[in-house]
Structures are given as C-alpha cells and as structure tokens.
Image 1 (tube, rainbow, N blue to C red):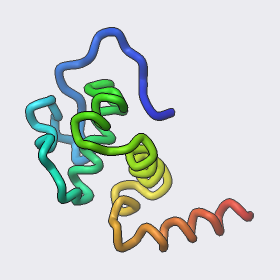
Image 2 (image 1 turned 180 degrees about the vertical axis):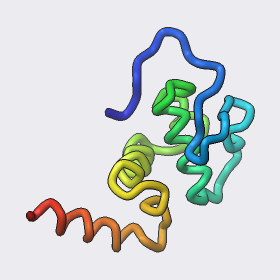
Image 3 (image 1 turned 60 degrees about the vertical axis):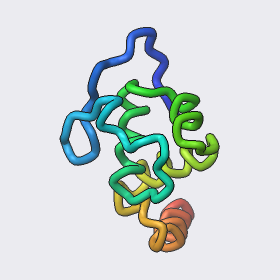
Image 4 (image 1 turned 30 degrees about the vertical axis):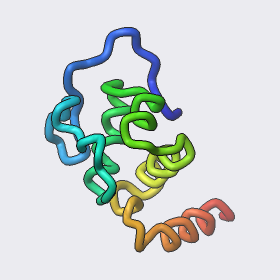
Amino acid sequence: MIEQHNSIRPVKVIGPLGEPLTLDSLPPSSTTRWVVRRKAEVVAAVSGGLLSVDDVCARYGLTVEEFAGWQRAIDRSGMPGLRVTRIQHYKSLYERQQKF
C-alpha cells in the first residue's frame, strides 16, 4: 500500500529514527541529494499520513515509481535497502528469497 487516505492529516508523525517529523522538518523541496535518511523521512511522512504520494511527487519532483521504489526498499530491507550502492545486492537477495 503506497498511502493511507485520511481526511484529517496529523501535525507530526514518527520518523525513521524515532524523531517527530513535521512538514517543516522534512527535507526542503529543493533537495537534490537524496541520502538514506532523507528518503526514509519522506517515506515515513507518507506512511504516517503527513503527506500524500501526490504531494511528495509534486514537492520533490519525484515520479510515483521512484517513490514506490523507496517504499519497497524499506519494506524489504529497512533503511539499508535505500543505499544506492546496495540496491543491486538487496534486489538479488530479495529475488533469491522469493524462489524458495
């Protein structure tokens, strides 16, 4: 599930490291360097209902597929799965697990 549909959005949600996240504490819309923590914060904001997928894509210039990839990576491997240098490793590991 990519997003939760709530008519009332929370003021804050719990971030990936246990810290409170608000709209003001999310990465700025001008972010171009996406480190693991920033990606995880954005995914947590959507999961917690702070932002919708459409809001995130418009705010950060992402595609739905790109965001969905971040969400899948977290679901499969946690925050380490978001590391660009490890994507292939985690992808092949997940595919091997699916065969058994």
